[in-house]
Amino acid sequence: DWSMTSFIQDCIQEIREMIPDDEQVVCGLSGGIDSTVVAVLLHKAIGKRLHCILVDNGVLRHNEALEVVESLTKHFDLNLKHVEAQDLFLSRLHGVKDPEEKRKIIGHTFIEVFEKEAKSIPDVKWLAQGTLYPDVIESVSFKGPSAVIKSHHNVGGLPEKMDLKLVEPLRELFKDEVRKVAVELGIPDTIVWRHPFPGPGLAIRVIGTITPERLEILRKSDRIVQNELFASNWYTRVWQGFAVLLPLKTVGVMGDERTYEHVVALRIVDSIDAMTADWSRIPPEILARISNRIINEVQGVNRVVFDISSKPPSTIEWE
Ligand code: XMP
Image (cartoon, rainbow, N blue to C red; front, side, top):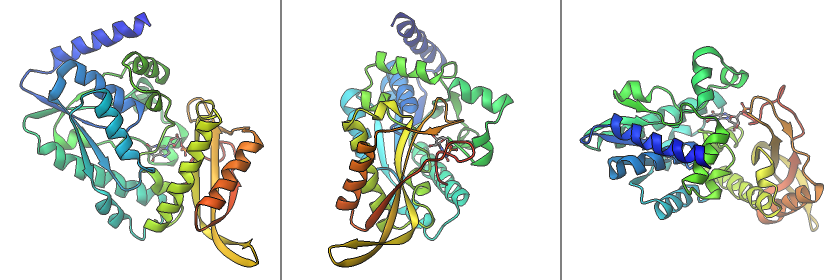
């Protein structure tokens, strides 16, 4: 794609002109497409003067941090630090039930951990961020419903607090253009087509209080959802698909035994921009397979339900 190739060339040129030779740039990597594209562009422009930081907050999906580190260091020789902060995040989330409280704790803890790492790099003067055009407009003139209802999205306040200058190479792009740039840059499909994943991660999908056991049940269930969406070729046809662990137990039966165990909800939606959404009309056989696998393979779950609510009035996430 010619226009994307020229975007990439111009962008690399601009970055080189903007950032003096003796200054370093720091970038938070999440494994999502935006931060990955930013990192690869910066890396092409300034090489090892870009320092990427991936914070494991303890509420990532199964194997997620390792997969991200592996795929990015394998494909692109990125300067990437994997910070294992699971215990810190989980101890602060201990006993917390309120969704907004969870978001705040995760947001603040992220800033704290990120800041500490960034400060340990000499001559860091810049923060690279994956701000897109819709974020730019939204922050000046318009707040979408979810921005108001849930304290949203990428953690604000970092640049001001750390006194860093911002480099935002995607400021003029829409999501579909970012995908084209990503393809052009040779970023793997698993990242290009990855579903959106909230900053507060699985913390807002374990409804109610978070414990290591409950997180593990959700991780195993969610992994089955992801696998089955891939296997059936439905992964790229839906906007987002995931599991949610409910804060209740229900009665079931196994052999001659009564069971009393957890309920997992499936949330699989179609959407164009996450502002509105509807539940995906996914074939019942696939739902059946997901349900059977979760109940058979995930210890502690005896019931799976499918969420058939649209947004509005529901939201995509349950918290
Ligand atoms: P809702 O639940 O508001 O979600 O319909 C809309 C989109 O935003 C994602 N989402 C979040 N992303 N931090 C994020 O970075 C958050 O706190 C957050 N809450 C929801 C959600 O996954 C969906 O794509």
